[in-house]
Image 1 (cartoon, rainbow, N blue to C red):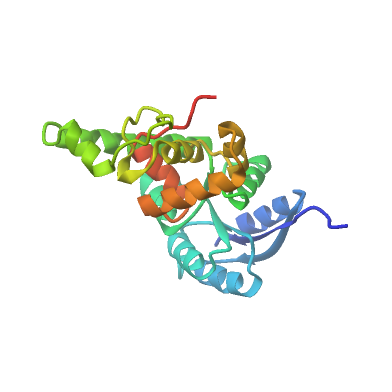
Image 2 (cartoon, rainbow, N blue to C red; image 1 turned 90 degrees about the vertical axis):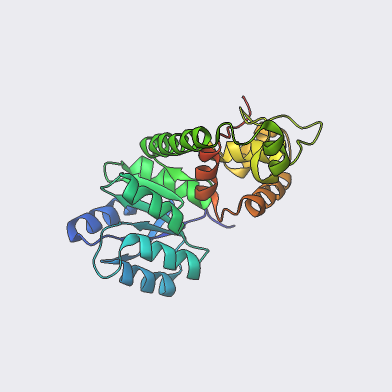
Length: 250
């Protein structure tokens, strides 16, 4: 009989005491196996090539190769490995480059063992592993950008122009949150699924919320990824916040 699945984790942090502390903490968590520890981004990429872990806990500011570049290289070369950033910094200059590089999770180093374990489990299931304060900062930043963009284009494009760019909303499907006409040709159902991704729901949870099969949810996700040009769920969260897309009411 097959036992419970074990998540193989690699730790990357240039501070020895921090790195060893994280390794020790992870060793106490059930269902997690630490397969390596790197002192910089260059070593992290090399160890990912050797061990093919499920998840990398990645510091950002490291010598030789920083966490953003290491994340970019890992996601490009080893797409089966997810990256959760674990850093001291939660400023925009750290957060957004890491997400653009392909990180699916972002935590600060005041996170406890339970929060780290949850983020690891979330990214393994395809959800975004973002701490609540990071989600709030992401929402504030992208909402501000969306508002600025709307103000800049007010009066230059009418309703017909918006509808023509996004395409019609198919009949029989519910509208997603406050967005009357979803962008980039998304159907209302695809926008609804996108909003639920932004809420941090897994495919199974979305299927349960919408009373459809997980296979149907996966089809919607593949379609909306192709239409919006996002590569992963972290980028999908950013896209949803930027366009004011929210999920369906519970």
